[in-house]
Length: 191
Image (tube, one colour):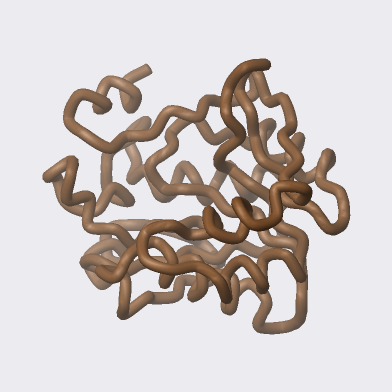
């Protein structure tokens, strides 16, 4: 699942899904990385300017869902995406953020291969780095975390209450954690 519903208000350039990365919209890169890494189904959660994002991108056979409540924060997009990903039954859910150009197919494949039942497998880029996105949530864990999500926190509340399920996996050299949040981060789209 790709979370791409935000308006990019801190960046001030519109939805980050449409940022140019390697001559294509950033959301196309992230969807491609999930596909290249072995995700057989991809869900893209849109919100702000959803019609424009759809019009300006080629997301192939990814399932696009629109979170009408996107302005309430990340939690509503997380819930929308998990519900869409598990519509045909409970499955593990890999969650990627649209503003991370360092997501690669190799990174996704590594996380999927390292995932264990009952856990949240989280990318860690370096031995002292905090675990973060992308993350693979086991099916039951994804549903419970989505149910507890509020505001702009996504799964944070669930993970604080259940630290034992968090399984950091070293992903050094397979991608990067840096995101594009403010104008000073735009250089990450050129490297």
